[in-house]
Every structure is written in C-alpha cells, then in structure tokens.
Image (cartoon, rainbow, N blue to C red; front, top):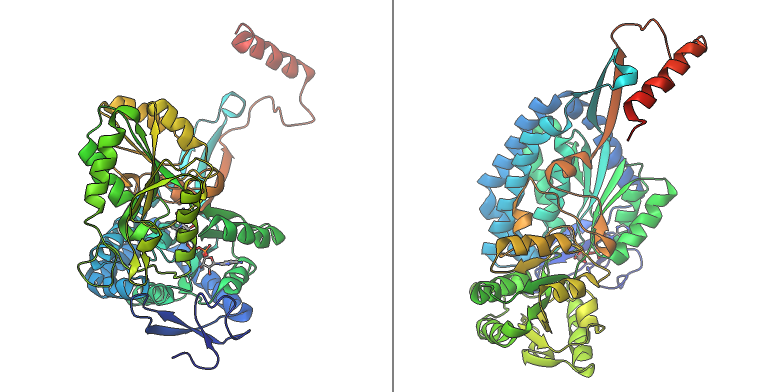
Length: 508
Ligand code: NAD
C-alpha cells in the first residue's frame, strides 16, 4: 500500500499535493512493483552536473573507446534479457514475448550506434571550393554535452534507448526521466550500465518522478531534450525549453494508416493490420489505427480481418495476446472514441464499448466511421481499427494524409514499385510496404514524424547527428599572392573574380 507521502501514477495530481515518493504498479494486479523518490529540481540539477563532469571522460575515450563500453552495455542487456523482460511484463503489462522482442531491438540499435558513430560523425575532408582552394576543409560532429531524455511507458526500453544509445555513442552524457508508469525499468537500465561500465558511473543516470521532474530536467541546463510522449505534453516541454533556448527533439503520437490496394495479398494484409493495430493492446506510437481498403477488396478484407481478430484477446495470463492497459485512464479515451464513432454513424463489426473490460480491452473493428470522428482523427491507443472503403490507393493516400499526425504507415499492393510510389506520397516519417512497423527494426533508418507527430529523428545516421553539432574547420595550406579577405585586396582582383564568374556561370 502507498504510504502517507506516496502517490500513484494516474492519481491525477495525486491525492497528496506534494508527495515524496510514488509507486509503480503491475497493471494486471495493481500490486506495487517498486517505490521511487519524486525527484525535484536540486536532485535533477545534481544528476545533470554529475553527467556533465563524467561526460568529459566519456568524450575523451573517442569513438573506439565508447564503442567498447557500449558493446559491454549491450552485452549486459543480452545476458539479462530474461530479468528485464520479466520486469517489463510486470511494470508495463505486455506479454513476455513482446518484451523480449522490444529488448532485442534495443540491443541491436545500441550495437549499430556504437559501430557506426565514427563513420557518421568522425572528421572528414570536404572539397574547399574555388575561393578557398589554398585551404583544407573538414567537418566533424561533436557531442552536445548532456542530453535529457524524457520517455514514455508504452515501449519503456526500446523507445528511450533510441535516444540514449545514440546520444551516448555521439559522446554525450545522458540523464533519463522515465515515465512515472515505468520507473523501475529506467532504474534497471542505469544499473545495467553501471555494472557493464563501472568507470562510466554518472555518464548515464536516471531521475524519477512525474511531469514536474521532467520540467526540472528541461530547466537544468541540459544541452538538448529528447522527448517521447504525447503531442500535448510535447507542447509543454517545448514551452519550458523555450525559456532557455534548449533545443528539443520531439517524438510524439500518431494515427497511422494502412492502405490495401486491389491485388494485394489480403491474408497477409489482414494479419499485418492486426499485429500493427493490436499488438501491445494498440499502445504503439506507430500502431495502425486507420485502414483504407480499395472498394473491390473491401468486403473480403474486412471478413478476413474480423475472422482473425475474433480469436485475439486481452488478459493478464500468459496465453493472452496483449495485456491490460498500462495507463488505466486510457480506457476512457477508447470508450469515448468508440461511442462517438457509433453516434456519428459508424458500425461495429467486432467488439465495441463492451470489449473495454477490467482484464483489458478486447479487439474492435469499426466500418463506415466518418473521417471527422475522433476514432479517425485522434490517437486512440487501443486495440481498435477503423476500416474505410476507398476507390483506390490514390484516394487512400489523400485520406491518410488528411491527419494532423504523420508518424509511420503501411501500404499493401501486388506490385512493390506501386507500393513504394504510394509510400513516398504518404505524409509521414516512415512507411513499410507489404509489412507493418518494419522500418523500426532497421537501425540504419531514421525514425520520427511530421506535423503533430513531432520533428527530429532518432535511429540511423540522422539519429546520431541529432545528438551532435557540426563543427567546420578550414586550415590554410599556403598563402595566395592575392588575398581576397584583406582590405589590401587590389581592385583588379575583384574585377578578375567577376570575369571568372561570368565565364563559369554566366551562360547558364
Ligand atoms: P506523456 O506525454 O503523458 O508523458 C511522456 C513523458 O513526459 C513522461 O515521462 C512524463 O512524466 C513526462 N512529462 C509529463 N509532463 C511533463 C512536463 N510538463 N514537462 C516535462 N516532462 C513531462 O506520454 P505517455 O503517455 O507516457 O506516452 C504515450 C505517448 O507517447 C503516445 O502519444 C505515444 O504515441 C507517444 N510515443 C511516441 C513515440 C515516438 O517515437 N514517436 C514512441 C513511443 C510513444
């Protein structure tokens, strides 16, 4: 039970106005997983200061030294995958298999960042151009200093590691504020770091608490904030960061669409749509929430989708396909979207409001929901799919793009080239053709959104550069007889320069 000074995530502002500690709970049983301090400004600032000091050593190791230590960290995650998966299952509620998949992805990304950092960020020569031919020119990407990472609860390992591993590989210190729903996982990651890299204590640290702890991290003088969470909180984070001109990376929510064209493999599309929309109980930022199926295949596709979805279920037991909602208040959002969809003229093919139960939320498939209804426009974050009938892929792209979000998406077509063409036209950061969510599995690809899904990129070379600043250097190799950057420059030289430009470019 919570003590007098302990509150719970989701207690609105808490029954106590200023708690000292908070509990994280097992969403399946409501039992306490662990109790953590609500850390306030002085403690947060201290963690950032420690990270700043420790990051001097970390930076001095260079790419090769950091690669070695990051590999040791990845090794520790790999050796303890079972422990961590158990904790993820308890604190987040997802099935064990999903937890293992998430941790596997985190390990793969950590290794990629460690191995590729030098090639992407290391110093390289650049052609100096006509006006500076007597110079060498180079660019390198230097660490920012200390990065504050604010994380969500839905992928409590993979999502923050997408910022943490890349920021560390770029040479930064990191202070991580995990979600108040999954603080034990955040603490576990830092403990694993300390075991794997004992000399690097403080380079990567954790602070626990609610929104105000995150806000304190934004105000702590960190050199960048990497935020993952809802667009609403993202706005609050940006407002606080604006006070100190602290740059931000925004990884926010989505309302991703899946397009099914005539000729596509409908069985594969239905299978993928269910995984994309309902795995993790739909609590996936890049989860499929809307489907646009071409008129000639619409009925058959809905039939296949419904047949398969009917055998899926939520629950706390090991045989369930997904767990209970990690954040219980999300059921109110799901119920509101389903109710409004019906009021607006939609039809429930499977599930509906009665599938929102205490053991979790069952699968729901809706058709004929108007495009203005919240089930189509707002992030539902439940195992629900709306399926709309469209003329073809072109109309589907138009409707998919008419969203304020734009994170991921998927296209199912017979012809791969047509799929890629539609994918390129989708207004989102990532799209997979004839599969779902695959782009997140590829460490070399950037991950991030457009519109209210955010800006900036994690993963891939862009994800490494996100946590660094470009440093340009020219070094004069020999002096020219005429110096164009001198007040002593002869008038004749300017004339000759103008003539050269006319000869080179004037006839275009
Ligand atoms: P949330 O916005 O409620 O919270 C995210 C984090 O922000 C938490 O750690 C929270 O404590 C912190 N926070 C809250 N108020 C703050 C403030 N004023 N200043 C600083 N920090 C503050 O989001 P959530 O419910 O934890 O996560 C779910 C959301 O995250 C969904 O919208 C989902 O789509 C999104 N998400 C996006 C990605 C992505 O990569 N784009 C990945 C996972 C989740």
